Image 1 (cartoon, one colour):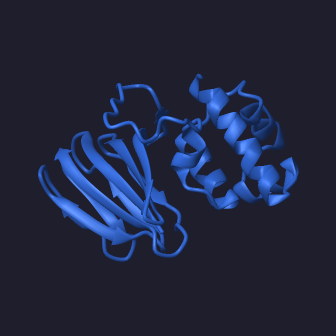
Image 2 (cartoon, rainbow, N blue to C red):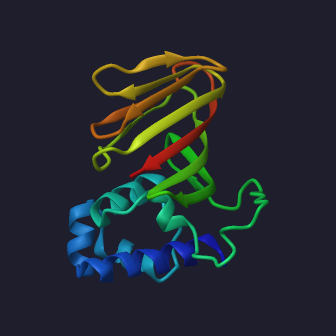
Image 3 (cartoon, rainbow, N blue to C red):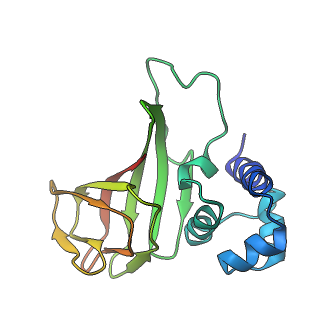
Length: 183
């Protein structure tokens, strides 16, 4: 199923599950009601920023919006091809590679691309959500907004995402792996 349809179906399901109107979700997320309607109908490509805002309002992990539920999640081998679940933003692109639920935790694994010279401030996640990042190339300034750290290729950081946090590529493009861990 194509990504816009999956996202639309998942948005509609999450909104219904919370008993919220289209207008209320749009207002809380800071987007137009028409935009949300088109997203739910699978007629509009979402931006990363819009999906982050909607995931926050609907209290669901970003990855929940990106993957159609499958019955073969327990397959012993999973291959994710580049571009299958790619979301482009103005400064950051993420591509969901895998999602695993086990032992009461959910892990989402993303390929992360931060554009040169850009800075993205992510809103707070719910309590105990952990972000883990391994930088593959470039220099990345990342972490809690009050004390971001500068990482280079091969460097790793783990932090709780309960407050605003930044992703910044002060020089060239950055490629990294992002693992989101939800309780």
